[in-house]
Image (cartoon, rainbow, N blue to C red; front, top):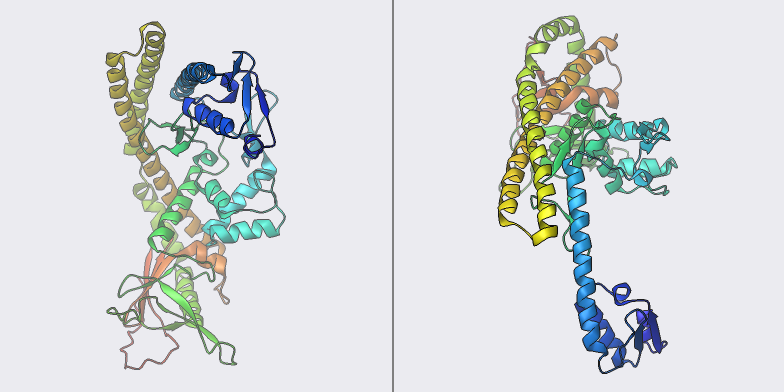
Length: 462
């Protein structure tokens, strides 16, 4: 409408009141003056103000200021209500745009099973080595609707599902906030306001251990730089010389002799010249099959040793004891915070803001934030211990399930068993399995080197 008026298509704008035109004094006066320059008049029915009148702008300034102050008061009261609700631990869900949960007729949250399957699929594919972009592409190709019921999945949507703590039954409150009540600009909370972490608020779709495994995988890929899923080996072969990742290259592309080889991405970088060998993909596959099959011959011994020490390597009793103390302290501080907010609200209504109450609120908030941070760290450590237990048991289950030696390369077995492998200059290899087991081996690169290498003998198996 304003654009049409400025273009000369409107002569008179009828408005119910000043507050309905704008709640910002500067915006209101600026717009009115622009319209006056174009010969467009605005009439405010409730205040009986014509902007073309000589007294109109003075009255409009006063009324706009009152409207702005009213907007500030409403915003302050609304913000106080929301923050008190967060301090009470009340969690809200945007069910219309949230995958996996819905509100039942009784007002309680419940899991939507057919949507939960999609959430599980996203987490499983990510742990299997797929990128968020690849997962989004596959979901779109399969015709699965997004949380907003759209047909095309975005990478950011997949990433949000993988990193949202609500899927493990927890919630983070006040992760964002409205920076200015006039512009309504939403800003990410990076410490400006207290955040509230609510544990075990609702039934989880993803077990906490699995959720922590996903976050660990995010960290691993971030530390490794660019990550692609062109091969199961992507981001899992490490150079023993510089610590960088091996990358996939094509030799003799388009010819009958085309082959895929892997070498350190820094191998030919200036001033580095890594001395680790270039390895054919077939050689990497054979090396893994030989190493994994060697574990199968000792799987009963490995299982027995791990069963004996599993409790020790995943002991989280100290973390749980401290977490219980922190939660008790946090409950007391939350009560004090609610009482402070109530007193502050009454004081503002009666005689304005009180500096002593504000100081007390800031001190409580600082203590509460420190406890929240420690609680989050302890929860993560407990989840990591549980994740370690899951990884060990999963690895042992994989060994027991595999009755015969692997003949053909299975990408799922590779992803489930191996964390990463390190290739050294002398063609020795160190496999680091998911459970933390390290296994030395030897690889035949399948590529002739320009200089003579000393190939180590196969390492004796412990």
